[in-house]
Image (cartoon, rainbow, N blue to C red):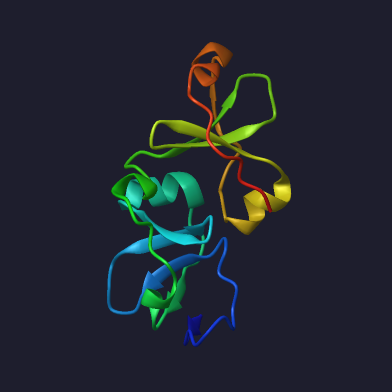
Length: 130
């Protein structure tokens, strides 16, 4: 799908983006585009989700700091025997608060089950809502 971004015509929160003629991929999260660092991280988080090709990606604010991009190896996790799923990136876990949020951000899978002590030891970041 190709867009020509003029003004605020389209709301991009939750979109997976690729700039035309560039191999870089981005997730729009918290109103900014966050770089997805490599194919294994993309597949771990999003499976084989489609990506929206954007003609003018610069009109979507870019994360200001490198730590605002997703880290290589970012992963979805959950504590064994529990339902909450978290995005772990940049040293924090962010609770994905609902199935609607999972769908909105194109997350794939039910999270890697880890011992609860491991999940509980990860610092908490802002939740990801639909």
